[in-house]
Amino acid sequence: MTKRTQTRSDAFETPPRSTVTVLAVALAGLAALALLGAGAGLATAQADGPTVSVTDTELSPSGTATVDVVLTSAPNGLAGYNVVLTVDDPDVVRIESASYPDRFGLTTDPAIGDEGRTVTLEAADTGSTIDAGASDVTLATVEIAGDAPGQAELAVDPRQVDANDGDRVRPADRAGALTVAADSSSASTSGARGAESPSTGPIDELGGNADGLPIGLVVLLGAVAAISALSALAVSRRRS
Image (cartoon, rainbow, N blue to C red):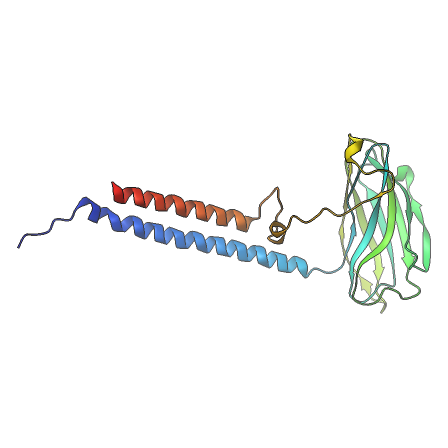
């Protein structure tokens, strides 16, 4: 009987397939873990408690705009609040005035600090119009004026927020982004309302945005590219 001699193709065909399979499984596992981590981060963010936030806006150096101060949720209602807003760069924008929604029956005149850098807001819901479970409650509206092109933040300090049952609420805070554009055609006109930046869709849901992809998506794309490259290498070896 003639002894069969192993050919070069027989010797090298199996290892590349095994290597590709192992690496593909490992990379797919890493991608899955990264996506699960992004999903967990999203779930945590959605479970966050109340936040006092300031809407973003854009205006011209000679124009004015308004931004809203909003309580994102009031699980136990809202009895009253004391909030201080501060512009981090008064050379770019300044606070002109502020006003309260009619639903607040008792208010304190907005106290604007020197050079329009700060404003103290205080109001009470004496008519109990803000019930438990309310969301996106506008606390006040603030008018700002642009002085020079640039960017600034309108930080919010919720010093005291009380629920209807008398308990103290300790909300998180989110500053508003204020942009003074050099080109007035791209900015808001006088009296224009500020608005939140629109969602970029599914990318936001994974914890990223259009300019910075989420880690889960980056790993997944990298895994796909690596698997394709390894598969091409295996095919090339089998044909040689």
